[in-house]
Image (cartoon, rainbow, N blue to C red):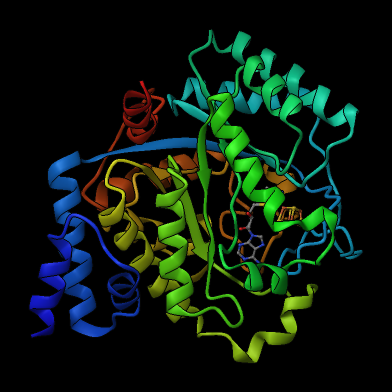
Length: 365
Ligand code: SAM
Ligand code: SF4
């Protein structure tokens, strides 16, 4: 009966909250069947291509105080760094030369003029030194519409801003309730990014204290309702120097958080077949083959870390962050072999834009 139920759900055009909750909570052989069938369906219809984004975590200075994050402003034990512009440009050149297709620039959140102008200049320089051939995604938090527009015009065309949880009550359990961490502002930022013309990405953490399967199902429905182009979802991993650490004994096991994240990826792939879904780095902190497993069951984007090695250990959002002591070359070699082992092909030199973005533009015309 239940295997048939999974088969029925996989073939439905859309899924309800209760159907999604059912899939997200699956365990055992029924879960194995669901993941395999979804992966095969997706790869069969959309192909094997996986796109690389070279990830540069260029600074861990942050003005915010999210309760889960190891680089939050109030963590005085975090060693702060800011990679100089030339090293960032060199990392971009590395991505270009190795045919990664795209770059992701990520950091803690700052919105002072020195920071925003520096990013504008960097974006223009990266575009120039790579002959406009490198796609650029940025993930630099909440900014004003003017700043988002300035960065778009300087060459960034995709933006990642996770909603973290679409349940407003849970959002305020994991963030201070103040103007700097306002739920509505975050949603409005996503809408502004879409209005400007960015391919817009969001996502959530899986296994937060108090989070339910229904919350997670509603997160997926939120992505659909918001017409999101790209999603990154990873397991929540507690960090000793953060306020959420006090809930460590109430959390699902790390393995359960990992398994549910894969269930989320497969369920989202059924709900939104044409979006980009990233195999989040946090999966690899739990299972060495974590990201490759995500690629088998619906993810199509992977982000090799090309941050200069000496700083990787300081971008510690959570404990046991992977690849903190490898050079970029080492990381990319091991990844290409791993992607092929997962039965996928790398789209070398391609931007790997979200098909959903173009499909929704056509609908709007
Ligand atoms: N500061 C920007 C922002 O918050 O959007 C971008 C950088 S932030 C470090 C990137 C993502 O890391 C967040 O959206 C969050 O989901 C994830 N993250 C932070 N702490 C984490 C933790 N303890 N476990 C898992 N993911 C975490
Ligand atoms: Fe700063 Fe982003 Fe971490 Fe929040 S999640 S503390 S904004 S780096």
